Image (cartoon, rainbow, N blue to C red; front, side, top):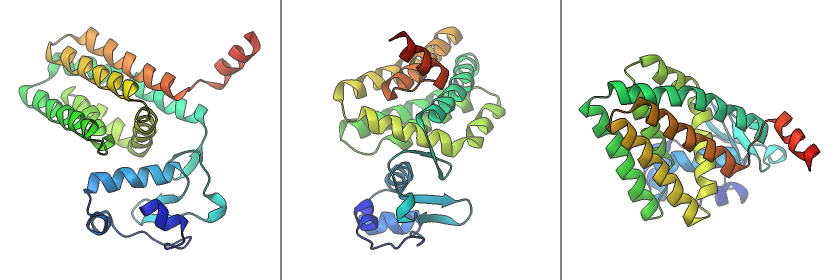
Amino acid sequence: MLERDIREGKFAPGAKLPTESALAEQFAVSRPAVREAIAQLRSAGLVHTRQGAGTFVADATSARSAFSLAGRQLDKAELCYVFEIREEVETGAAALAARYRSLEDLDAMRVSLNRLNDAVEHGQPAAQHDIDFHHAIAAASGNRFFHELLELFAEQIVESIVIARSNTARTGRLTHNVQLEHQSIFEAIEEGNPEAARAAMHVHLSNAKKRLGLRRPAESSRIEAAE
């Protein structure tokens, strides 16, 4: 509905959107649902966010369909680089989480995973629960710098998860596969198996890249040349 209002001109280019709380009340949805909707609007180039100022409607000339991170348009190659960062950071965090997680950490992961599964089952926005699950793993590593690294790239990671979930939501089988990948990560951490946790996270993020068709430019060129 918010996208429709923007496209129909109810919010003029350059206009500041209401706060998350106000939008949640206006559309009778949760704040995580509003947050996910705004992330999707950024992906479509319809809005941009200024840190500390709010979210604003983009000019009509810049509202084009593309991957969008940190308030600017990014192509698939750049999104691939975001996933590369996630692979390097989050596989290590998962391994350490398996070694150092507490019962409270496991509870936090379990809650996020259950909420994620419930949201998917009922066709509700799920990206925020997905994000919470990954952040719970970073927190369980016992190394605050893993969590701070995720915070440093928070907007990029949120966008990558929103884009990935929007893509998999179109196919029930893919959504089921993603849920199984999350479950495998959790089980490896719960069992205290660092290498299994590292491998499960690597599989999950590698598959996410494949599902989005992401490749480094040089890799794409080699494949095209071979064909």
